[in-house]
Every structure is written in structure tokens, then in C-alpha cells.
Length: 200
Image 1 (tube, rainbow, N blue to C red):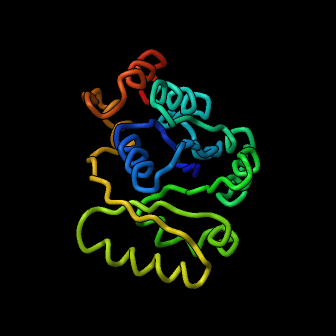
Image 2 (cartoon, helix red, strand yellow):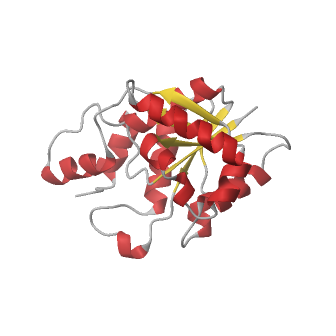
């Protein structure tokens, strides 16, 4: 009964996030995916971004009724700078003993894992689901996954997830310009943004 953890700002959560989580669940046979919004520092907030309470609320709306998907506020509750290894350990501590924990991330971030805080411990203690677009990029990721396996014993599942041409920053920009965002977000999230006048 492995669990996936999907970290990000989710400002706002969009259909690309949903598709990646679904692909990760299928590829790794995950029983559950936890969406983990990061804590945004005060110097990074402003008119163009939203606070943790809004981002968590939008996630909960987006995930309602989606079996196996839920949100965790572990980093929002901690506040300040959060490191992935600490957050994954906290989540693992609340799961039944023996549950595997996979961290879900894109190809670019996966290739940089050895530069992360306490990378040795992160790579030895946890598994990963890395997203890749179809094509030559997969061979590079496969070589990297094999190197991490040999060096740290890291288990990696590579998934081919279709790229959806949408990003949170693009959505925020479109809202600021008054441009349509139809089809980019789960409908309850779009309503929440308009009702709370976010990103304007």
C-alpha cells in the first residue's frame, strides 16, 4: 500500500497537476496521492500569489470526490523553510509501518535531486516517481535512475505523462489580464478564484 506525495505551490492547482498525479498513481500502483502545498515565504507573496489557506482550500475543492487523492498541510503548519526530507519523514511517521513513500516530481527536478538538502538521506530513505515526456528524454532519465539505484539504493518509477500546456503562472497572468481560463482548472477551483477575487 504505497503512498505518493506530490509537492508544489499549487497556486492555483490546475488540470496539469491532476493529470500528473493520476499518471503517477497508475505507474507506481499507488494506493493514495497526497498533495502537499509548500509554505510560501512572506517575501514571495503579494498581489500575484495567494496564501496557504487559499491554496489548501483550492486543493481540497479540486480533490473532492477523487478516490485516493487528498491534501496534507504538513508544510503549511510547519511554516518557514521546509525541506522535502523532513516533510516526507513527518508524513511517513503517520502511516502504517511498512508503507512505502514515493515523492512525485518532474524530470528536471528529478535530475537535480543530488543537489537537494540532505540528498543522501532523501535518496536512501524514499522512492520517486519521475515524469517524462515521450521521446529521447526517457533514456537519459533511465540512466540517471540506474545510477541513483547503484549509488543510494533508490527506487524510481518512470512514467510517461502527456504534457498539458498549462502552468500556474500562466493562469495567474491570464486572470490579471482578464483573459479566459476555461478548461485550465477544475471547475470548483475556477469558481473559488472568482468568488475570492484571487490573482486580480
